[in-house]
Length: 84
Image 1 (tube, rainbow, N blue to C red):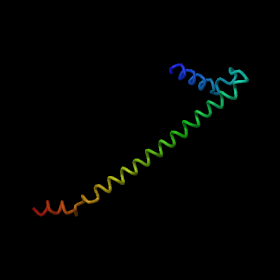
Image 2: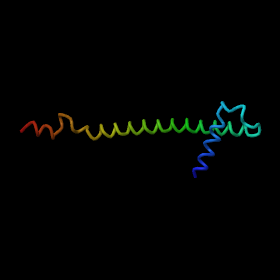
Image 3: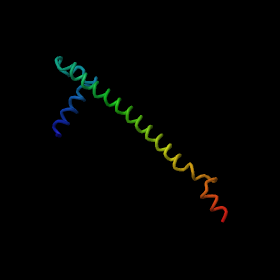
Image 4: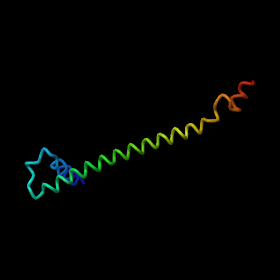
């Protein structure tokens, strides 16, 4: 498994623009497109992860509001405590 990870990482790094002159011509397009595809996938993942986190925080706040909506100073529990 580590061999595969190492090979994929090496091909990804080899696809960076800094290695433009060092790649063989037949592999140039394939390696560059692999590098671009990985970058686009990572960018899309971070955008989706941000949306998921934002949606979860909104759901948490809504659930918190629903659960604490009956606990204000005018709730029956607080009125009973004040009447004693």
